Length: 399
Ligand code: PLP
Image 1 (cartoon, protein in one colour):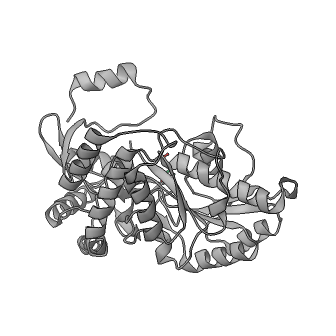
Image 2 (cartoon, helix red, strand yellow; image 1 turned 180 degrees about the vertical axis):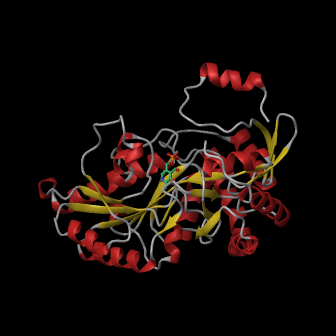
């Protein structure tokens, strides 16, 4: 699964910030990964939701290699064809007006936060005190200090104080609590994940989200959707907000957008589209022609398989429900972003699955998380679910 030499290099020289699984991969094709010994693994993890079009998709490889040979980077001081075409495409797909390109989910959310605060300052003046951003308990918005301040989970907060001021966390799904917080008059934005990913794959209630959107609109509080994990087809529509019949003012995206190359960003609706003027925000690597070309190819590939996402998701749900493996206590999520609640330790099931040739993730306290490539073939899907059932029928051992 992994050679001692490779593991030793990490042990000796890489900061131990990740609890890595015992596998070293050298190659991928479709939704199948190969380790150093040539052993195949079905990939239900997609590099934590990044490899949305699988590994080494021929159209993606062609677009990236051609662009790499032509122009990789020139900075945001100039125009590039892939950058313009991608911006146009993302605006069309989201129905929003403008885009800012960054490199990661945390950086995308940092931009959303800056944009929301500046909008409020422009409209009401800094003295108005309207700079607080409400986020939900259980949320995850990234690892930079401000994205951590936004994150509503104490486990990520330990040891890193002091945080950025101006965030309050409200219980997810509690409209009355939200209304009380908004009534304080200091709120400029509400930032939500429509399906909380790291928190446990927990979709927000539709009625609650619509109420939240109405309350925000009534007070000119910007509604911001963190679609870093849910966006770009993951939940079966281009963006999860499209299933909630709301239009956020700001939408962050990252993970799956460039099919594996680092890209993030945010989209703006009519209200904040004029907020960030020259010099107000930037990112050296944001929206390089290489990543933009990768993203354009990714969007083409996702477009071709998007309508099949609900069928694939239903296959996983039905097969698991019918097999009813011993440890499975529930299935939740949206599209191909699924959380299987399990009795026992999710990490232990993920380790056992890997030993059996299937990569899965965990989320929150009780869930095994599945984020397979949207392009996964039926055969890969069937093999993966079969392994999952086998593993969930084993008795879990605490770590
Ligand atoms: N927001 C959400 C909803 C996420 O799931 C993540 C990562 O898991 C992030 C933000 C942070 O993204 P990144 O790790 O690319 O900074």
